[in-house]
Length: 536
Image (cartoon, rainbow, N blue to C red):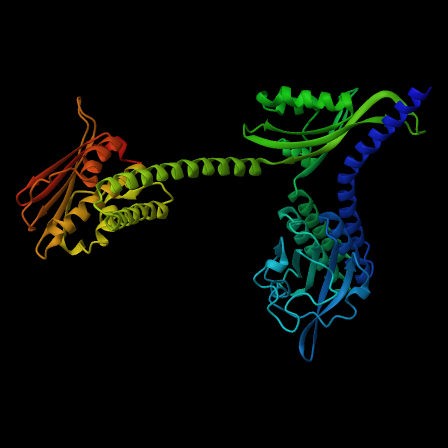
């Protein structure tokens, strides 16, 4: 007997939990219904606005809500507290008249919504004397959401304001709901002020209902209920829409299961069976393939519960499930984009660190003293930074070969002594941009120290041509750096970092060939690089 009593108590507890989960969706719908009823019933303006404020607080989880309306007197506009939720009217009784401060101005000017996770961190906050923020004794507000209440003609009637003592409480869905409520408040005030009746009132009520439905639909939260025994499935219009179905389309439990992506179907059914078996939560995200062929993501939540008869007795072992569904496709896509960006950033950072590490080691090996190392290493870091800047300007997709040369030569003041010879510019991928940018930097550095750019008469000619692919060779770029008019050139006694970077590093990085010729008239660097390794 005791075991049976405990089982009944446990069943009642689980039923209460399931009913609480389902009640949350019902509560939201009822809040919208109460607002619509208040607006449609043509109550007093105070009762109507109070219903909007109370409903807004309930719908978005705010602690405080208020409506300030615009009053025009001899001094201009004043803003009076009309309705308050979450605190007694006395909470504002000893404060001075609300003014159009920097924080309030967008609302009272009708510019748009102000939503802040922490209004005290907003740059517009605390700009006005004498309080420079909330006065002592003010309701504690950190999360902040405000929307102008204005007519279709743009006349600002006042503003809806909602707050919470904690930060980060209001999201984009809350903003959409409040915009809808602000529209409803504007309609209600217009009705009251105009005192119109008859057809005008019916037309405005229809408009109000459409706007209210838009506010609900914009949240994309649909409700559903499943009879576990009969598999009868009842879904709201929003829920059907989340699965690509219209309000009038047939959509039973078998249709739901068939819509779920084959890769997620077994997981979804297993999660539902587990929730039915244990009476626990059903909480899962899965892919669905809608009739158009598009793949979406849906987040479904629910809970299984014992069904009761009208007299309160438990109907033996029959369970139902009730819950909500939400289309989370955009969030999933954003998460995937973020993952790809993080992976790309990680890859680029690693490559950059490897490049810097190699530059440091090679520069140190070739330096005669610490000061020489510092100067050479800093110059090479700047050269690397310049190529990164070019890529950043193009979203790290590609960079122009001509821009790479110009950027590297600018630091040496050599543009006026630079001659170009090419038929068309080329776009280089990020890897090739960094490699060729460093190569041009080393050539320019050598020319400024020992070659054509070290004197007043020297010149540098940079030319390139492309060679189409043949049966034996791939398409290639022939890039040539030719110095003239400088001091006589002799081959160096040892290979420095620049020569090694050109002859081995650049060639190995881009699978090409690099040849340095120390002609009497000036250094010549000839590069032959496959276009497949260069182009984006």
